[in-house]
Length: 371
Image 1: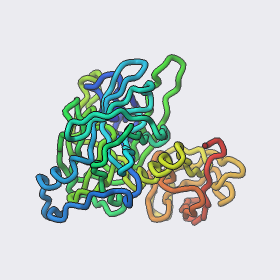
Image 2: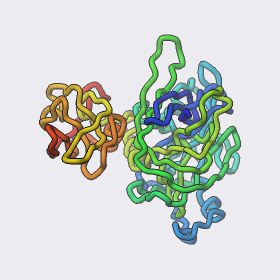
Image 3: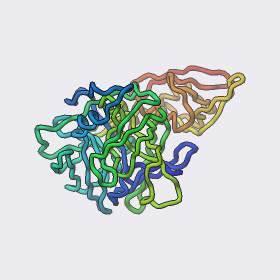
Image 4: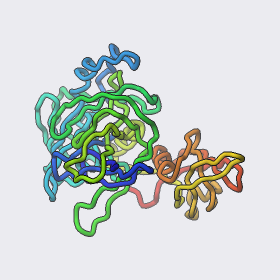
């Protein structure tokens, strides 16, 4: 089984299940999902109060939120591609995936609103590390319908969800399902577009859903039953053995949690770049014994001097099994959790050392080489 990000070329590992990736943006029929979202205070739309988690009314939800979802067509030096996006504010800022628009040539982004109107757009900011991007409409109309953002912290396994996007060029397509899992570590690698380039690895503790998500959904929003955005659709799992054209939904889709997406989107709108907190360790998947129990975690192979991990007292050989209250299942899981924090925040690391659990406090910082 392979996991494929719907929208641009991504290949990657998906835990023990297979590979994770994104379709090549060259072909509109092989574009898929992923995107980010801004602060909810910028949205004008209101949640659909007639629809609830216990009794979802998908017809009313779709009618209310479809105007906030856009289709994105992109020209690159290698060809053309398509994806989706969500309107963040009245200024025409739209959240989508980096793998959808990151390789666009000048003047190569066209956004189609739900009512069919088309506008050129420019890139406000790209963040390959999270596969998020913000584009801005040129001369946006005054009647845009920004989405209302929810909180991914409120999402529960089993909650009903609806995905809206541009799969296979079929704009404003609505699919429904449930949240299948939370904090699912998914790693994608953006395939290089030019010879000699290296792909960018993206690790996210994603929301897993069974709503049908296909190439072209990339960057499109995942809504809860109240019409609030809780994630940005970013990748899908598909059976291996076929080409990208054979990739499609098998009921395993993944979305970037909106809390992370909105944090990155705010920075991209304000600064054009986003900073990322980091811990400063080299890790591998590992296990540790605590009493009679064996725990999965991230085994520390090396600690960089002067980093938050070093100052917190993390040592090589430690197995990190928890970040705050969240269990760490491996190296990808830890990377995904750290990415959700901002520099300056304190986190509690629970490590297993010599058969005993030790709690350490680390103050995260941003990498010095970031903009």
